[in-house]
Length: 123
Image (cartoon, rainbow, N blue to C red; front, side, top):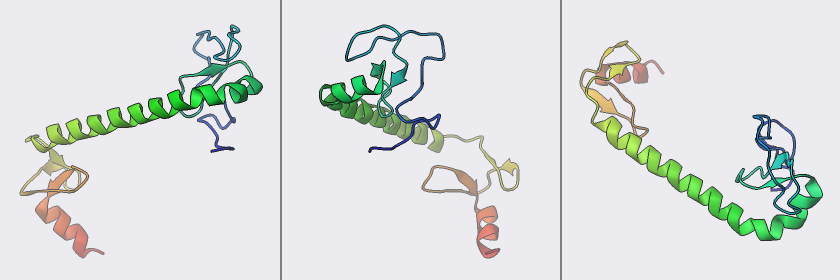
């Protein structure tokens, strides 16, 4: 994963401490760390050498944190899909009206059966 860029396009910069928070370096414990791990966004470092030296200790935490975030996101998607399938007052974004004879797609969205059939014939 070397060379992977964070949100702001700067290698190793992650979220940054732009919100006024101060962080301690996970390696040298100095105040004012500005770089966070670009994968888990949990570990903070004052400089790139500290981040590189701390990687062996941080790797297990990083992998676990990323996996936990992925599990939570999956659980949210499942809960949203379960709640979405029971919705009755949906509107079709194709005809901008109430869904008539709903056809639910694998993604969980529902559209009018006639609207989908018409779109499919327009190919």
